[in-house]
Length: 66
Image (cartoon, rainbow, N blue to C red):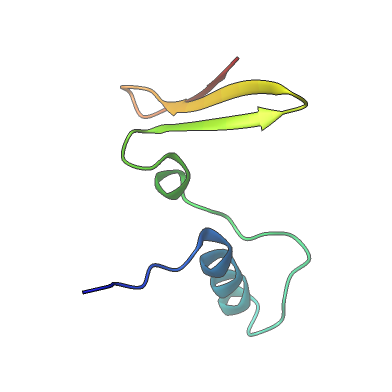
């Protein structure tokens, strides 16, 4: 059985429309860290040719490292 899972972009657009009574915003809506970091709590970000890691610490804070 296939279950539909909306993309982060779809979720952000939906939240944005709901917050603005159907009027689109020009900037993206907030995305939860859980969506970004996934089950492992780590997101790899490629920026200007450099790889960064955004991770959740054991105390629940976010840290960005090279």
